[in-house]
Image 1 (cartoon, rainbow, N blue to C red):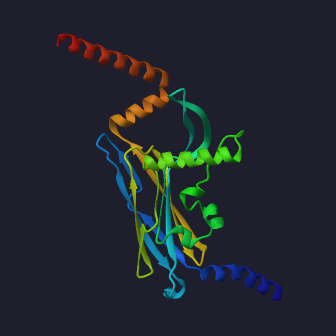
Image 2 (cartoon, helix red, strand yellow; image 1 turned 120 degrees about the vertical axis):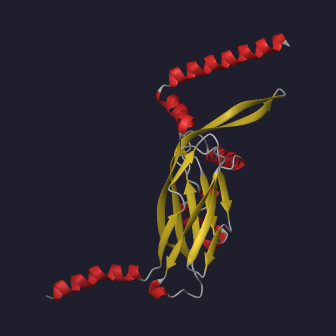
Image 3 (cartoon, helix red, strand yellow; image 1 turned 180 degrees about the vertical axis):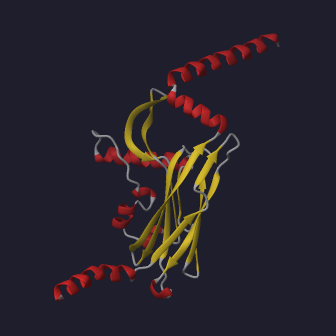
Length: 253
């Protein structure tokens, strides 16, 4: 009987410890984003509540960081150099998997919330995105190409940070707005919410978002993927036809 009672106490101990931690109740404004010919981008609202043990908000409330990531894809980064007065692609690096989209918003600057180790574990910040470079390059070359990839994606507005992008009301309710640009690829996106207190991630939650094309855009995308040879031939023929029409109109003038 004592053994059973001791075992029950041991089993209940993790539950009691877990119950003392704050919890997250997150959600997103859109679970599906549809891309049509008139699509100019979207604004994604991430919101939710923080549930503290006993419903008592501490004097130093927790902070929130949200990360929205797109599907991973292989990317080749090429470095241009001036050779004999001409800019040419001299070196390149292939990344086996890199997020097609990455945005992070937080209630305070991330450097004030977590240290480098925690930031690297949870990919909190542009410099901590986990990339998979190919083999063969030196660590210095890998770092140079990683910096170049992040800079390129930032200029395309596909990677960005919002250090004060999360608003917390009453220490309990939070919300953040993430801009989705028009040129994002389709696929399954993840919206991760992290509850951070005293430099530690106390809780985390994930929601998925589907971005898909509709109408003629979807037909073109599916044709390019399923019938790539026929799609390429049609694209070449259309280009030749448009070029012929343009030259014919020019001759008439």
